[in-house]
Every structure is written in structure tokens, then in C-alpha cells.
Image 1: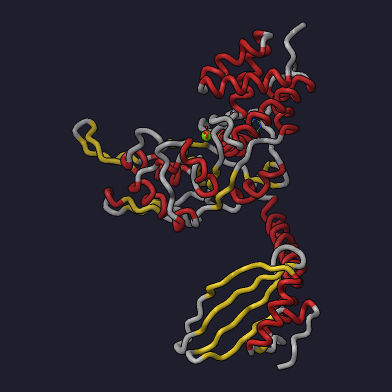
Image 2 (image 1 turned 90 degrees about the horizontal axis):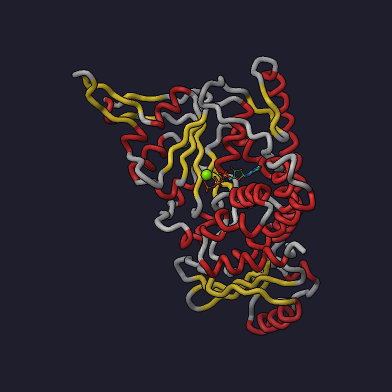
Length: 410
Ligand SMILES: Nc1ncnc2c1ncn2[C@@H]1O[C@H](COP(=O)(O)OP(=O)(O)OP(=O)(O)O)[C@@H](O)[C@H]1O
Ligand SMILES: [Mg+2]
């Protein structure tokens, strides 16, 4: 074997030597940070099994030393003409290729929307055109102060495409209101079912009952929403009992049907306007906060994989100041709103550092601000809106944060 050429690309590859029982190899690939390399080591047995038993990242200098050592030990570099050169090329070719594919897909969607557009009435929400629903008493009230952040565009696109959407995030981050406000603006009726309480599989799927001497079937919330084309929000899905999750699984495919086993296996097909949503506080990426949401169940991966799961973070301070001004017009001013949004942001940062044990929701902020405008006194307003809801230690810390931003009246 020739000494390995130490120019960067030539060093990438598979270094192999035969052993009595099979082969031993080192694989050198590019690591995430510049000028670092990933080294993986494996031993291949006679029957071909080859698990990686060493996996480390080294710098250029360290790699040079390793290459010399492997050379001495009789490792020969595999010709990497096909695989590694292809790897590098493929790696750089991926993004331009994907961008071309995404542009083509967008053009196709536009053409499709254009050809349907005249028939179905739509309303614009963010960058999206959302088809309008049938209206009716279950359509939520429009909140004129509601702010559609650009971050919500993907979620709205999923609603249009009839995907199952699960929103996860801290309490009061805006999960329920996002779905309700999309429905409010597009005229779709919404029903909600909360899993953290007394919801039984009977309430959810349906049950037989006797009325006026006759035995009749009463549809639960799921078949009702499916037949009537309503939007169903399953709130706090991480508290649902297994029989409810089992019923839900059947309808998680976009056109999935529900079989009412208790009703002689009657099949319920979804109305085209039916949509299914779930919200949760402690699922998936939020699992690290499970201790704050006691009793929440872990959801299995197969179930989660049937949803598009979005982590909804609190609004940014700029967005939240905007929401304060819109919600509490005309009295909330820009300087007041900016200070209040900064206080909320500081409280959330303290929560993230685990200095505070309670999250600071947009709901809490709006309530405090409203009471403050009535009383003219932030401290007095903070009593019922904040302090009474948290531990004395948290109240003391939050009071400190508020004082840091608001000097007492002179
Ligand atoms: N983008 C927004 N624009 C205006 N107001 C908002 C926005 N997001 C949240 N809010 C306000 O925050 C309140 C709380 O939001 P919401 O009830 O949707 O939270 P949630 O995440 O569903 O909370 P929970 O987990 O407790 O159910 C809403 O009633 C609304 O007043
Ligand atoms: Mg909610």
C-alpha cells in the first residue's frame, strides 16, 4: 500500500485489513464542525456481522497521526471512487436538487388551486388560501386581536391538506386558539373534547341508551364530527385512556373510517370538511417537562408518527407586545406593551433555567395587563393574575423581575 495522500478529500474512506477471524476497518468521514473528522471502527466476523464499536470525532492533526499508525499496522485504504466520491457529490447536490423539486411541487399545487379556485370559496390566512366551511353555531368567534405569526404557515397548510395535526407546547402558548382562529375565519364548526377529566370511550365514540322505552344509539363526539364535517380538537391527548386512542388510530389516515363495533360494525366515513387535531403539553419534544404536567402518559412512537407534531413556542416579545396592543386597544400603548412583553420573556427565561417552576403564559400576561389597566397598579393586579397562582418562592422571583422593569411611582 502507498502512504495515504494527506490532502483532505483523499483521507476520507474506508481503511481495511484482514484478521484471522475476518476483517477490521476504520471509516473516515466528515464531521459536523469544520476540519473535524468522524472515525468509526468495526470488526467483521467470518459470518459477516460488523457492528461499529468505536465512534469518535478528531481534528486534522489527530487524523494525520492515525493514518500513519494504520499504515504501519497494514490497513489499506479501499478505493473510494464510487462510494465516497459519490457521497461528497451527493451531499452537495442534495439541496439544489431538493429546491428544484420543491419549486415544481409548488407550481403543481398552484395550478391545482387555480383550477378549483373559482368553485370553492376561500379565505386568506397568512400565505395560505383556506377553503371556507359551512358556517353554523359551532364556528368559534373571531378574535380580531389574534396574530397569525408566519411560523403558523406550515400548520395552516397541513390543515388545508387534511393532515392530522398535533400541537404541543406549554400551557397558554396558543395551541387551541390557533386552530379555533383558523376555523373562525374560514367558517368551520369546532368541537373540543378534553381527555384530562371524565371523558369516557362512550362519550367519545357513542353508546346505547333507552329513551321512551326504545333503545337508541347516541353518537359520541368523534362520529358526530366525522359525519357533520366539524373540526375536532382532542385536548390534552396525553391523558387519554387507551380505548380512546385505539378508536382515534383508525381515523388518523386522511380518509380513515371509523368502525362502530358496538353498533353492529357500522362504518362512519369522514365528511370532506372533517379535521382532527390534538393538543398536548408533555409529549415528544416536550417530554422533558413531564414533571410539570402530572399524570401525562408517554405516547408511543407509532401513534405519534401518524401525526404532524408541531412544537408551539410562546410568541416573541415583539409579537406579544403587538397582541397586547391589539387585545387591549385603545388603552394599551407601545411602551407599556414592550415592558410587559419583556417581563414575560424574562419570566420564561427564568423558567427555562429552572429558577421558576411555573410557565408564564400569554393568557396570564393578557389577564395581568387587563387588570393593571383597571387598577393602575401592576403589583395589585399581579396578585390575582399571577402571585396567587404560583408558589411563594416563584412569586418572590417574579416580583423581583417586575421591579427590575418597572420603577415604583414617584
Ligand atoms: N397568536 C396569538 N394572538 C393573540 N392572542 C394569542 C395568540 N396566541 C395566544 N394568544 C392568547 O393566549 C391565550 C391562550 O392561548 P390558548 O388557549 O390557545 O393556549 P393553549 O396552548 O391551548 O393552552 P392550554 O395548554 O392551557 O390549553 C388565548 O386565549 C389568546 O388570548
Ligand atoms: Mg388549549
